[in-house]
Length: 567
Image: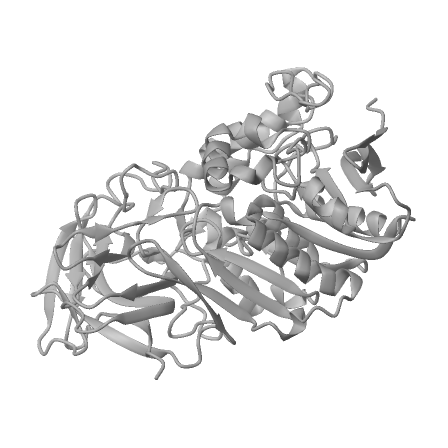
C-alpha cells in the first residue's frame, strides 16, 4: 500500500501519491501541487508514462545539459528545479500564479497499478476520470486544462475527443494526433527504431513494480516504481508495444482505437508544432489544428529541439496567457491573437516569427516543379518528351535540383509529390527528401526535435498508394492504409506522396533539391528515427531497382507552397 503524504514545500502544498480508483477498480496515483492560500483555482494536468517522481536530469541527462546551456535559469530563476520532470510543467513556475498542477502516472507506470498499454483506449478513459475528479475538488474552480509534450500531448488529443465535462482547454505541445500516420507507419512504412529504444528505456524502466528500475525519487530516496514485483508478474502486466505496432501494419481496429476523433474535439486548443520534427509529431500538430472541431484554436510553429521551447520563459508566458483566458476568464486579449503564428526559417538556422490567420496560407501560390529524369532537374515546365532514371533502392538514389533562385524565395506550407515509378519487385518504398544547398553546393541541415534534419521529408510504400478522394487535397493526399495492392514488376504507377509541412526562405543563388531513395535519408550523425525492420522491409522486395518516369503522360512533379513577397 502506497500512502498519500502531504507536505508544505517552497510555498506549495504538495500531496504526493494521491490515489484514485478507476471505474474498473484499478488504483492510479498522482502528485498534486497547489497554493497554500485557500481558494478555488484552475487545474493544469498531464498524464504520462515517464514517472511523476523521476527528475528530468536523472532520466535525461544529455537533454538536461543541452537545455541548461540554452536556458541557464531553468532551475534557478524563480524555481529550485526540485520538481522538474520530463515534458511536464514545473510546479514552482505555475502554482505561485494561482494554478493547481497535477501529474498522473498512467496505468501500469510509476506508482500507478494496472496493465501497461501505451496510448490505448483504457488509458484514455483513465485520464477522463482524473479530469472529472480534479474538476470536482473543493480547491478547483471546475475548469481543467491539459498541457505537456509528446506522450502527454497525444493523450490530450485522445481524451479531448471524449469531451470530459470539466475539460476547458488543451495545449498539445509537439504531439501526434494520428498515431498510425504520424508515428507508427510513415506512408505505410514501419517507423521502428525510435519505438525499439523508447520502449525499454523510457517506458519499461518506469513500469509499476519494476525492481530493476534505477530511478529514485530525489526527495525521498524511494524507488519511483512502487513495490518490487516478480518478473513473471511484470511480463503479464504489460503489452508488447513494439510488437503490437509491427503486427498491425494497416490502419485497422487496433490502430483506430488509438486515433483521436479530432472532429469531436470542442475545447479551445493551442497546438504547438516543431518544424524540426519530421517523423514524429510535426504532422500531428498541423492536422490536429486543421481537423479539430473546436471553434477556438491556435497554431504555433517553432524551431529547436523537442523539449527546449516548452520550458523557455516566453513560451511559458504564452501557455499561461492561454490558460488564464480559458480557465479563469481573464480578459487578456488572447481571443484577439492571430490564429496562426509561424517561425519562418532561413538556411542559417534562424527564424522570424510571423503572424498569419489561416493554414495553409490563403496567399499561397501552389507551384509545380516538374521532374526531368534526363537532366535531373526541377523546373516550372514539364519536359517535352518522356524520360526515365533508375536507382538501386538501397543506393544513393536520385537528386533533382532547381536552378539557382534568381531572388529570395519562400516556401511555407504542406507539399506533395506526384511520382510515376516502377519497381523490379512487387513493392517499393519511396523516401522523398527536400534539401537546401548554397551557391557553392554546401548543404544546410537544421537542429531538429531529436536530431539534425533536412528541410522536409515524405514517405510512401507503393503497395499502400490507395487514397481517399473525399479526404485528399492536392497538397495533402490522404492514404487509407486499409489494403495492400502489390505491384506488377516493371509497370509504372502514379504515386501521390505526402510531404510534411515545412517553411524555408531560400536566399538568391540557393537551390532546392529533391532526393529520392529507397531507404532512410541520414543526416550525420545518424538519427534515431529510422525505418529498417527486416520483417517490415524484407530483402528481395525492398532492395530492388526503382525507375522514375517523367514527362509526357507520366508527368512527375513536386507541388510546393510558394509564398509571394508582401509588397
